[in-house]
Length: 290
Ligand code: HPA
Image (cartoon, rainbow, N blue to C red; front, side, top):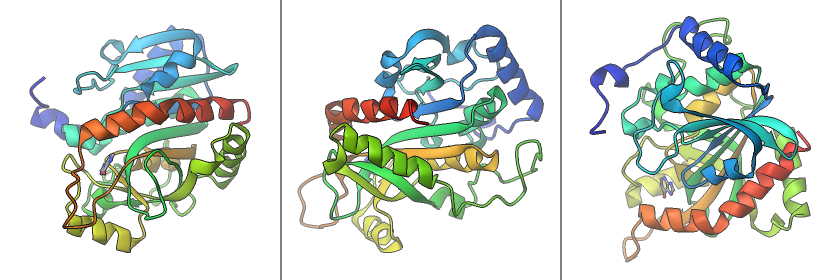
């Protein structure tokens, strides 16, 4: 696909559209998941660990957006992970693809209407914190919503009270109990030595950061930077879902003008491949305890 039309990039939705999607899924899937998982770039093979699956390509789901990125599976997988029912998005929607911020977050409201109570989000991110190494897993404890600073908050516009309040609190966006649980599980499975905790900053992308921008983000208190997650978390918190966020640190953000290294997507995918299994195991082991 060449790109998205202006019509799609400005798309907003009515309650009835989310409801139609949710009702269609409820009538086509037997599962009634309480947990939804959004898989980041290269992390979609989590769905391979699921059993008793029902798979819906996005293009077959009424009103659902369709992914433009080649190689992204673009499907919603219902099934069981460690005996617990869940629904997993294999392939997410990024703002940099040209979708409206409301389209990026469309699935989250559908999850809410399906009866989901907990959202787990994973992503690939660049490390800004000097103490982080490539391959570390960062539990997100807070975020910086830079598209929100620029007026791209998915909750801008009419507020539908059936989803949540006009002015939702974000100071507790990432659930403290879930983070404590994730730490416990990571220790148990031997991932404790590369588990970090920190602040995730979202940039719209698709450009990687300049050195000056990276320094600004570090000064602002960001530990990792990426191009996703925050809009979905904002919408999830608006409708009362508990959130656990996990970033895989795929590269160190370049801060030095003399560095010969350059941020690139291939490095991101290579690290993801290397550590994806640990991250997937962590999510899967968590399922029994949520
Ligand atoms: N910057 C922004 N997004 C990213 C990066 C990065 O360095 N690595 C993975 N996603």
